[in-house]
Image 1 (cartoon, rainbow, N blue to C red):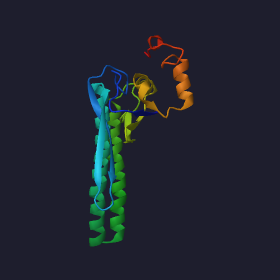
Image 2: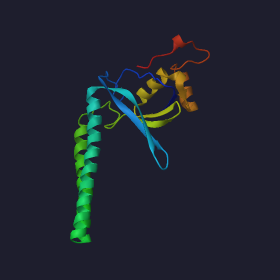
Image 3: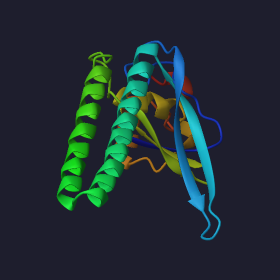
Amino acid sequence: MTVELSGHKFIFPPECTCCGAVPETTLAASASRSVGKKVAHTTSKAWDFPYCARCAKHVRDSKHANTMATIVFVIVVILAIVVGFNTSATWGFLVLISAIAGGLAVKSSLMTAAKRGCVPNCSSVQSAVTYSGWQGTRHTFDIATATYATKFMIANQSKLVNVPPAVWEWLKTNGYVSSPNQPQSARRDIR
């Protein structure tokens, strides 16, 4: 679910973003952007979302799987180029095909190991939050867990922007956000 907020500080509900367990650590959701044609200036921002230790581990393991697959692929592509120049294009092509197969096998094996760290409540083996970026004080997050996304919106309701009307109506109908006829103390808590 995409959540857009405007502000400099946000409230992060105290539960694992992935599975809903008690948080023990945080993982950063970051985004970068570059401006400039001749000289590029890159700016990065990050927000720390709560995770339990188990989910933090499988998220790190899945990132490691992607990194290792890329490294294997790059090394073997370089090898394919060297073989292709020193022998024949056919041998280089065969080494390239091997690189693709090897990279996929490494990634598959490491991702399988990362998935073993998940529990049924986990939203994904990879990060449960993606920070899509910012424009001024407006920040956009993609949150894989509907429950956490809802709690995040409720905790930051005064900072929400671009909420689809159907989502806003659902939040109001279920008593999760204040409406003009409902005092703030009457809001329901999501459990």
